[in-house]
Image 1: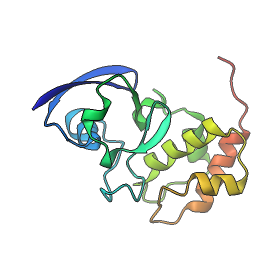
Image 2 (image 1 turned 135 degrees about the vertical axis):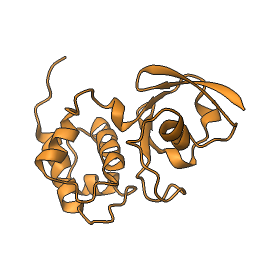
Image 3 (image 1 turned 60 degrees about the vertical axis):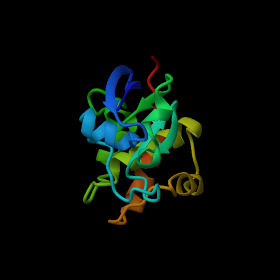
Length: 157
């Protein structure tokens, strides 16, 4: 067992787990951040997508050992405190979820896409979302929600 200090959702967390433990299991089982889902376990479906320093990554294949040196880890719970991130709001307005299992991964991927390209074409959306699977097939609603979030005026902070 080893002790790791992780920066998750702008908060420091200390966990004691075996070296090589999946970051996904640390998030879900040790910290109770269950919005990040386990599905395939081999980084093929994207349900476990989180951000590491703003870059979308699949938590199921990441080892906790690699994130104890200060990277910023953001989960779906860290996007907003009131579930009012523009992408989350667009997801609701477009009625994207069917079963909902992949939605946190979809949203995290969409946020990263829009951070990189605030006004993507439909083809750029398809390419940017390619790594997250939806078993229910709500891809058209996912695209609609991303287009809606992209067209929403940004608030000045």
